[in-house]
Image (tube, rainbow, N blue to C red; front, top):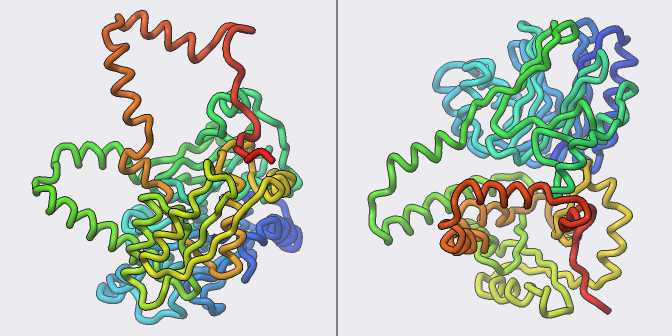
Length: 440
C-alpha cells in the first residue's frame, strides 16, 4: 500500500506548503517506505504529498506526485490497476501516446485520463485505488475511490483549509486540524462496532464513499454548500442487471464459468515486480485463492498462517493440510496471550478510528510475519460477502418462518425496541475493543 495526502489552502509560501505536505506524508512512512514526494502550486493553493511502496516499476520513473505528459494533470495515487497493460495498449493503438517514460500503472492512468477524460478512464480501471487528481486547466481537485472502497480516503474542511489523506494521522498533523469527536458518530460506533461510511469519528471529516468522485472547484472557499460525491459505479445497477439476465447454463457450465472468472481475477492480481504471498486460514475462501495462485505460478507460492495453541481457536492445522496438498512454501506462527496483549498499546496508531473487529490483532501479526518474506499478500476477504457464506444467511430464513406471521405493525414496534432499548433495561452497547484470548 502507498499513502496519499494533500490540501487546498491559499496564502502559503512554497516553503511553508512543502513543509506541511512533507509532515503529512511522513506520518504514513509505514505505508510507503520506498519513496516520497511533494508537489505544490501555491498560486492555486493546491498541494499533494505521497509515500510509495514500490510494486510495479521500482525505478524512479514511478515517482509521485506525477505530472501528465501534456502538463494538465497531477496525480497522487494509492493502489494498483490490474488491467493497466490493456489500457496502455489501447492508448498506443489510438495514437494517444507515442512513448512512455516507464512502465508504471500510474503513468497509464494519467495518460488515460488525458486522452479520454476522468469519468471514461475511471470506468475502465479494474483494481483497487484511491487517488487525488489536480486539473490545472479547470483548477479543480478530484478525489476518486475504487468501486468497493478497498483503498481509504478521508477528507474535510477545516476553516479555510480543505484536507484529504489515506489516513487520519496525515490530517491530524496539519496546523488547521481540529480533532473534535463527533458524539453522534460515537453513538453509531457503539451500535455497529465500527464507524460507518461516510462518517468519521471527527466532526467535519468524512470518508469518501466507494465508487465515487468528489470534485472541489477553485471557488470552494466561498461556496456555502459542501461538495457532494457523485457515483461513477452503482452496485445496485449491477445486481439488477444480473437478476434480469441470469446465467442460463447448467451446473457444470456454471462451475466452469466461475472457475474462469476467479482464475482470471487472481492471475491479474499476481502482476508485480516484488515477491507475492497469500494469507491462508484453511477455509474455503483463502484455500481457493491459494490454489488459483499456485495454478498460475511456476514456483511454490508463499503462504502464511496464524495458529493458536488452544484447539477451539486454531485453524493452522487445516491451513497446513491445504499447504501440503498444494505444495506451497508455508510459514506459520503460533500465538499465545502475551503476543496479543503486546499489540494492544499499538492499536491507536494502527487504526485511525475506534475499531472493534475481533480479527484485528491476528491480522496485524500475520501481516507483520508475512512482511519479512514478501511485499504483497492476497487474501480470501470478501468471499463470504460475495457468496453468502455467513451463518446469518441460514438463520434469517429460519427466523422469518417463525416470526413472519406476526402483523407488520407489531414487528415494527419490536424492531424499534431492539434499536432503542429502554434505559437500564436494554442490553449494554457493544463498544470498545473486542477480541478473544485463550485462558492461561
